[in-house]
Figure (cartoon, rainbow, N blue to C red):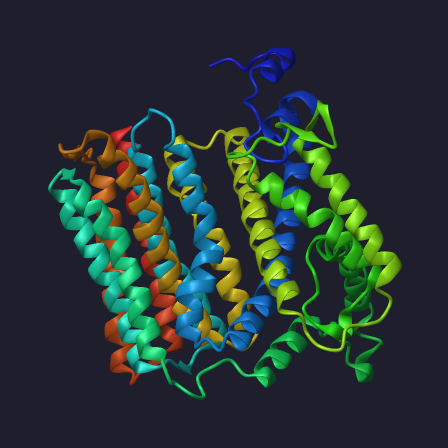
Length: 484
């Protein structure tokens, strides 16, 4: 097909799916020139990756660990609550928002959830194993998490093969996760010594904050490395600055009056933006003057700015102890940035794929299938690097299970409720069956290998899981290509 003229391609560019419109950048700003678009979009990809890594490593991981410590949660309990909510809630809300209209549950939605589950249970678990293995896992907690995920996936597979789902079955999916969380809570009652300790948190924080050092005995041969380190710090500065402006610090030793005031001013506005699919930013509300309706965002900005100004004038002393409210806000804002930047990363990757004329099947089974998993990958790898692989491995099962049972389950409840008392018909596709099979294989393999290794995660299994995911991707692309 002949290429469209630059002006026509610009007019045909789709609307932005996130903060930036990458298709419009290529078609309009850069006049459709691949020689300019590909390098610039590649730089944007690197920036998104760096932003994700910084948000997860320097903010999300410490805030999750500190919340778990303050709430006295075991790693498994923190994984099924904090990690699952942090990584899965944005996807669950997105599914619910997308299904508020009159449309049905698309086949791609179920495929994306299953592909994401296969990605996390194979690739992410493999990455955690390669980073931290060999490490021990609590036998009861590990077996419980994998077994419940295995049962949930098997039950959903059976429902899918029946080609229909009733309301009671959809509600059962959501209640199954509630039962799972209750069981985790019951098993963790009185489990002393399993809570993340303050010493571990400080070690993890130190691992994040340590600067790159250069061996002074080899300064002559390390000149290039020193220059690269300085360039990296210059690259990191705007990312670090923006994150500090919008994510409160969790440590009193890092208290800064300017950043605290910026947090008070900007965080409410960012949270309002994150709920813009439910509450439009430009919603008109009455404020101060009964006859005048102001945009909602302007009222929130004015109130938060006044609070920030009051804090700047009144609060001048460093707090003596850690504030759990700041830790909670840090957790929420970290989740926002990870979710937002993961979306930007996926949109940018999709634009690069379109520019390079990659087949839609490859894009669908790679870039789009990773949409629900990038946050899990970044968060769990950051936890593993910070010396908490047990926490990370628990999150690798709790997060995808939350997406499947709560995210997909809620969407199915909405659809089955519309056709009640009839069943909601599920469209059959062999690609979804393949996703189910590979998901079950990865779960059964992990359960068998780790149990066989006396509940230690071996490094070789990380390579095996990554190979399994590569095989799954190849098979899925082949099926998608052959079926059109």
